[in-house]
Image 1 (spheres, rainbow, N blue to C red):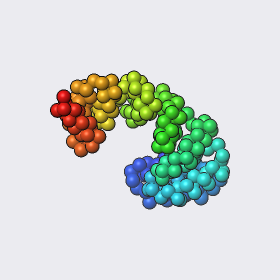
Image 2: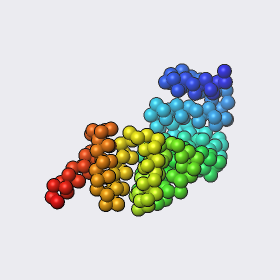
Image 3: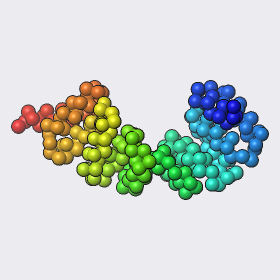
Image 4: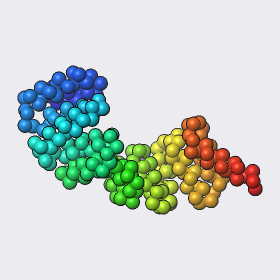
Length: 220
């Protein structure tokens, strides 16, 4: 079995110490190959050892400035530690160096979104959606960004797409309810809030939305 694959398999099986031994052997055998450092860094990221993970990703980048997966991995460390400025810089470098797949565009969009730059996030959510429009996380977050930039009709379509994939997605139900409120369709909004609460009884926002509509109805 290929040594790298063996290490990755061990990591996926949560056999971290055994995986670390394999990745360390790869680095010792090929100290100037960034692949070993990237895999070890991914393992450390998985173990939430963020400082060491950063050092290994940076070492991989020193060896190969155009190692797109190293930039992507480094971006994930920064994202996990809520350093969204450096996260998006790393994700952008990964894209600039040829990484062209849904995950990197999605993570770049999420970095912008966490900085409340919703408008800037949109083209990257769109690209991620073009790659994988069947991923409910991508579609839902894209919908949120559209709603945040007042593109309500488009946001509504995305929330409905999510619910076609997963009718028990409580946050999509809640946000669809908010759209109906925006459209002044109180009955449909109430229905969505109730559905969200059926799925997730402790959904605070849906509970508050339902309560506000009930207060409104009582005052009529």
